[in-house]
Image (cartoon, rainbow, N blue to C red; front, side, top):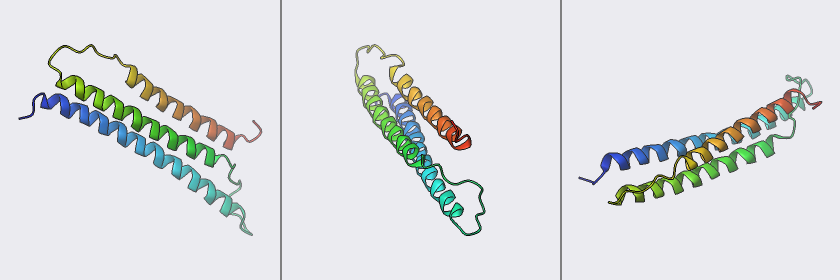
Length: 127
């Protein structure tokens, strides 16, 4: 039996949850770019079926989402290995607090803000 198995398993589950979230963020960035291309293609048809065309900001938003996803994976990986080493130590290791969790949550908050600004700009082009 692996020593501190339940602690290691919990650490791995947390890491995988952050990786899944990061992959979803990156996939959403890709989806935003593809949808903007779709809107542009539909608006350029002789009889357009959509009333507005892509705003041209999708590439920047998609790249930002992909970079946020990569940053989340890097931070989650550092956190995973740091906690795994702390679990294996026999002495008491002081907790780093919630620093990594706060950084990851901040990245997700920035992601939400970027998406809000992107959609606001697309909905109200006069801003």
